[in-house]
Image (cartoon, rainbow over all chains, first blue to last red; front, side):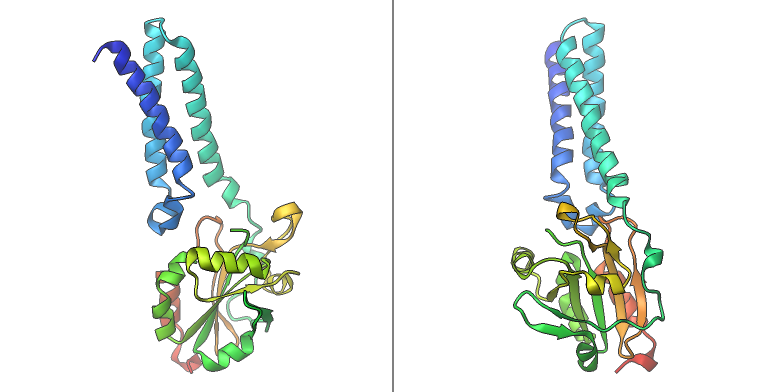
Length: 142
Length: 113
């Protein structure tokens, strides 16, 4: 492989890894707790990609060839990686404090709410037929 | 909730009912249930009354600034008392089914039915 071909391979291969790392988290890796809670697969792809792009960009500066493409792809790669890190380590943590919520040992307020088919379910009635009820709150709009 | 669905038989064998509450309309809940294969009840709380009573309201965080629920899990026993709570600090990270089943197995025998 010529030096130019090797540089191009690292530049575009690295960039492809970064894009893949960014776009694959929600459709694929969020589905598995193992890759969701700490997105190590995506971070590996993106930081691996950054190393490749970085080395290709440095080479284009040393050889004074391909500086424009090297710079554009390099900056874009850093921005995409920064955006991903900002989203997963900052944006998704913007939640109201849990201290406002009901505590352990407090009485659970009764409720009657309708399910997707319009059937009304009441907490106190469900408790009569079961050992316990697990109430999950979620944001909706999936 | 995918994780809970996967382990649904383990919740059923422990006689624990599961409901999930959001501000979603029934059509949205139906869509979610069919796309994710969710077989437990998805309850709609459009005015966020119950969400507010449990203290898990996230103001103006929904579409068009609507109030929605923050992610949370409560385990309620037969005396209608809260026996276990999980309030995540990151909306990506929910309680795992294994943790929930562990909390159910740790319920004191006195409050079992």
